[in-house]
Amino acid sequence: MVGYYMIGGIVFLISSFVSNRLKSKFKYYSKLSLQNGMSGAEIAEKMLKDNDIYDVKVISVKGSLTDHYNPGNKTVNLSESVYGHRNAAAAAVAAHEVGHAVQHATAYKWLTMRSRIVPVVGIASKFSNIVLMAGLALSATGNMIGAGIFLLGIFLFAITTAFAFITLPVEYDASNRALAWLEGSSGMLTPQEHDGAKDALKWAARTYLVAALGSLATLLYFIMKYMNNRR
Image 1 (cartoon, rainbow, N blue to C red):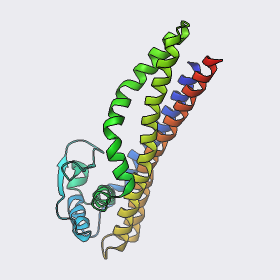
Image 2: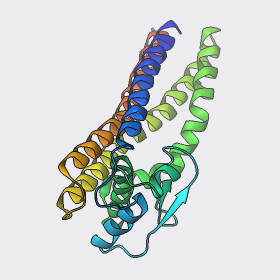
Image 3: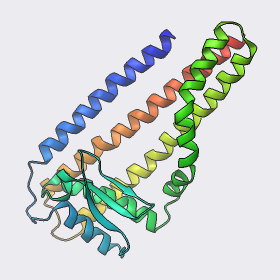
Image 4: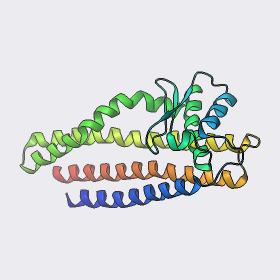
């Protein structure tokens, strides 16, 4: 289990660094006021309109960095620090979430795939750690059933890892759509504001990348552990 804790510790440190860096970036770019005077909500609504999407609502939700797109009820949910604020960070987040709405409207294949496996991932993430720990504990006692339970746990964890990697193109594509629209929409952002939005989204994407790589490293550890136990 030492290797497991080492991987967990390394992932935690990297994740904490990226998360803190993300927060500092958004705090910095939240001070960069937009010359166009538009709020995050207004930017989101304009991007929806420019993409001929009229069945998606833009609403405000509580919390910080709680912004998301809900394909179930077709809502772009913007945190209070984004919805009514008029700065480069708010513009970046608002446009990114609308990027997901555009993906949904155009049946972007990676988003469609992710949406389809969400129920399975929910079950896998709920039980994977329990099954893994139970399998390890039983295997340590020489119980043959433990190996099978451990393998089942690896399979469940592999599903969550796959989901993390499927999420990457979804998030990167949403950011690319956002930045392309912000740059192409006349008078939307100044070059400085656009660079700020791009930098903020870059660090946001890195949180997903770190999570995916951390999940993969943990999965490989469990696979190696299973193979060693079989010898």
